[in-house]
Amino acid sequence: MNNQEKKKLIISIDVDSPIKLMNFYRINNVVFDQNKLELFYETAFNRVLDFFNRLNIKATFFVVGDELQNSANIKNIILQAYKSGHEIENHTYSHPFGLATFSEEKIKEEIILCNQIIEKITGVTPVGFRSPGCSINSKVINIVADLGLKYDSSGFWSILIPLIKVFQSVLFKNGLNNADFGSVTNKLMQYPYIPSENNWLIPDTKSRQFLELPFPRTNVLGLPFYNCFNLWAPSIYTNYISKKTNKPYMMYLFHIIEFMDSSDGIPEELGVHPNIKTPVKDKIQKSERILSDLFECYELTRARDFVRLLLNNNCIANEK
Image (cartoon, rainbow, N blue to C red):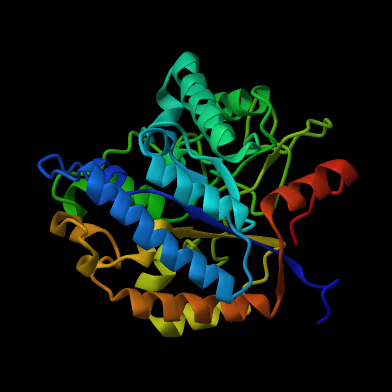
């Protein structure tokens, strides 16, 4: 298969720190101070940038504004990632859960503040957005589009979503601090599309200059296909799926925490998070195997280039 026949693969990474993850798991009795936060960023980014450099990957980092705003060291880390050719996009100012339930004013504030902070660091205005916890609906989509961004990549549905909603209080000691995942259903498309203003799950026939870039899921059972789940799942499963997946395009998601383990000063209370106790060396090796399989049938591209191509040429992909 030559490059012209290959489908497109976008690598993205959500920069959710232990502070944001403890909020997710409602862990309220642990102090993770500024020094620990800066050490987390330094260690994690050194590893992830080395990993991406070895594989010649230019990724899209979705960052949280308040952690950048409050630290010159973290600002410099993000700037170095940008100078290395990676994209820096909007993951809200404070990483609030249940964004889709917020007022329009609060949603705008979260997006605008994060945009401003990123632009001050990189000199480039963000064009991509991802909602914390994938809490998304038409209201959020329309606000993001009206603010001038070019794409959202929060669309995520799998069979695990309804299961988590039902069993979260059983699976996790304090439940989860995630009001909802928005108005997502199993009707969510698995290819890039222009979302309708009235219902973001429906492709719009109008030439709206805005795209939804959803996450993939397996055809059988609708299981998620992103790195955190794949690290947790048995290798026989991930080896098979990563070789056999045949999506029109692939938005493959990492989280920065996957480049850390419990020996890196991560609060032991976060042991509830998948793969925290797995040695980082093992996680990196398995991640590389998965990407190696994906490289066989997908061609790497940066999100901005992909979005620009589709919007400029009016060649929105069709599901196959």
